[in-house]
Length: 235
Image (tube, rainbow, N blue to C red; front, side, top):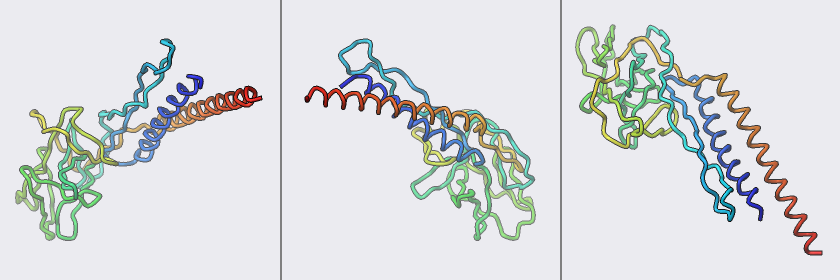
C-alpha cells in the first residue's frame, strides 16, 4: 500500500482533533471565564521504508491562558479574577477549579457556582450567607461579608501552567499542588468574558473543515487507484 495514504490519514486524524477543539471553543464563546484550547502539530517520522517520508502527529492541545475582557455587571456575587489563578469549588469527584465567577446562593444560602457546585472557603469548608442579608460584599482578597459581618474567604489558588487539566467547560482539575506567590485579585461586580475570539474561531473552523475534506478526498483517491491496480493485476 502506498505510504501516501498513511500520510493523508495521519493528517485527517490531526484535522479531526483540531475540528473538535475549535468547535468546543466556539460553543463556549459566551461562557464566563472560559479559556480556549489551541492545537499544535509536529512532524514525526513515518514508519515507511523511505527516510523522506514524515507524517504529522495527532495534535497536542494546550490551554490558552490569555485572560478575557472584564465586563461590569453590578451584581456583588459576579466575580472576575485579575491575574493568574482559580476559584476552588467542590465537585462530586473532588476539589476542582474555575475562573467562572458568576456565583449565586442556593436555597440554603450556600455560595455556589452557576452549575450548583459549592465554592470552597480558604482552608476548606463552604461559605454560607444568611438569607436575611441585605448587603453582600466580596473583597479583593476573596473575603466575603454580609451586612458588615465577615463570613470567610473564597479559596483562591494558582498553579503552574502544566498542572491543570480541563474537565469540560470552565472546570479544571489539578495535577499538582498550588504554587506559592500572589493569588489573583477579586473584582466584585464584574465578570471575565471568554477569551475565545468568535470571528477567529469561525474562520479556523471553516479552514480546518476544508482541510479535512481535502484529505478525505486524497484518501479516497489512493483507495480508488489501489483498487483499480488490484483489479487490473488480477486480470
